[in-house]
Amino acid sequence: MSCVLPVSAQNSSNVSYEGRAKSFVFLPSDDLFQNFKTVVPGDRKVQEINLQNGGRETIRMYLCAQKVGRDQFTTDQQFEISNELIDVMGLKLVLTTVDGKEKLIYSGPASGVPSGAADETGTMEKNINLGTYRPGAKAKITAYLYIPTWLDNRYQRAVSKIDWIFSCIIPDEVEIPDEETPLGPPPKPEEPPLDPPFNLEEPPTDDVLVNPPIIEILDDEVPLASPNTGDQMGPYLMLAIILVILAAAAIVWMIVKRRKNK
Image (tube, rainbow, N blue to C red):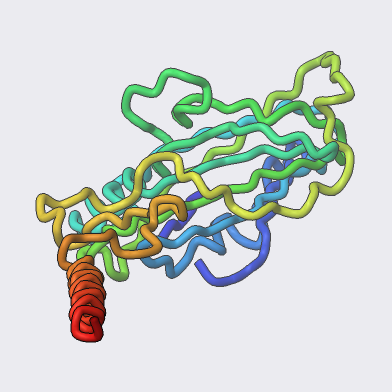
């Protein structure tokens, strides 16, 4: 089952196990990621994948991923660009059961193989346990795709491919706790999370003055009036001196007038 990654139809995909003879059935086609077409730098896309056990046996379902081979592309350049894209696009997979419980089962590059991964959500090379399903049981995988903002014209019209491999085992006797058994339709998908699996922004340049940082000034730090300076006090000082001179002249005039009257 090949999934094409570089999508406009707003519908969900379906993966159904139909029994020992029929194996898995994928609808509407082998390409589960109909919503991941025609992406542009900075896009955030969501794809809902419904899981169902349509067989008569209780099964335990698994998922893993691997890069497709060179034979899936016409040229070596197409093959190289496909591998580049799935290594830089971010992918999150959330498994949701009917009771509304969510579990992050993968977070990393769309290739499913991040370097140095240590935890259970760090790789899709090994089978990821999707739970145990009685006949008719349903669950859902919500896939969130993050496109880097810095992709350039080199990736125009490029198509990236990766194989998703669903498998299952049919144990002879399986004890199924109630909280692990999805029995009804999955809930509606939520909005994609804001945090991508890793930093997808364009690396900063050395020219830090092109976009200087914006500094927020708190209200108590904003001066409400200009500070007093010596130049601003000049007019008031001159007025006071003139008033003093006029008062002294008036006193002298009154003294001279009294002496003349005597």
